[in-house]
Amino acid sequence: DTQMTQSPSTLSAFMGDRVTITCRASQSIGTWLAWYQQKPGKAPKLLIYKTTSLESGVPSRFSGSGSGTEFTLTISSLQPDDFATYYCQQYDTYPGTFGQGTKVEI
Amino acid sequence: DVQLVESGGGLVQPGGSLKLSCVASGFTFNNYWMTWVRQAPGIGLEWVANIKKDGSQTNYVDSVKGRFTISRDNAKSSLYLRMDSLRAEDTAVYYCARDRVEYNFGYAKAPYFDYWGQGDLVTVSS
Image (cartoon, rainbow over all chains, first blue to last red; front, side, top):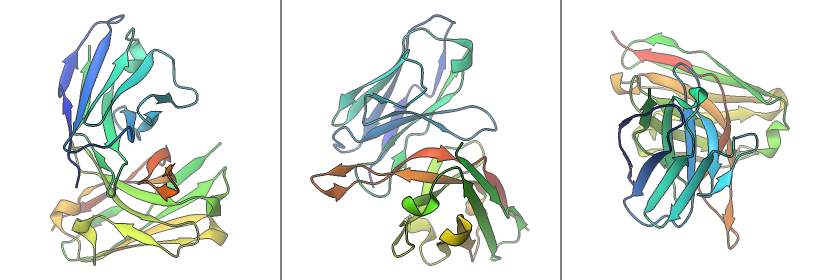
C-alpha cells in the first residue's frame, strides 16, 4: 500500500497568515491526490482533487500543487472558518490511503 | 441536496456482529459506486470497502477481508456494511461516502469521496 505522510502534524497560525501543509507519498502517485477538511464531530469535506482542482464551492484561497511524491495544500490567507484538520488522500491505486492529518489551530 | 444518513452503530462485544445502513437521497443512487470509510477515535481516516453501481463488484481493505461484507439495495437507495467477528481495533466512526472515480487511459483509478454521511460510532468492547 502507498503510505501518505503529512507535515506538520499541528500548525499554529494567525488569521490572515499564509499556510502550507505538505503531503508525501511513499511511491509516485502522479497527480492522483485529494485534500479534505474536517472539523470536530463532522464528516470530512472534499476541498481539492487531482492535486490542483478546486471542488465546487470551495473558496479560492485554497490551492494545491505537486506531483509524483510531494504535494502541498496552501491557504493564502487564513480565515476563522479554516481552523480544522486537513487530510490528503492518494487515489492512484487501491486502497486509497490517507495521511495522518494536519491540525491547523489558532 | 445530496444526503447520506448512517444508522445501526452501537456497542458490541468482541467477536460479535453489527450491520450498518446508509440511506442516500438527492442523487441517482444507482449511478455511483459507494464506499465505507472509518475513523478510529483521535486517529486518521481509513478506507474500508466499496461497491460497484450494480453491486456486482466489491473491494475491501485487507484488515476486514473475510469479516466485513458491503452490499447495496438500489431500489431503497441504501448501502450496508455487515461486520462480523468484530475486534477492538474495529472501534471507529464509520462514514458512508459517495465515490468519484477518474480514469487514466480508460482504466479507473481508486476513488476519492465527494459526499459523506455524518458518521456512526461502532464500539467493540466487553
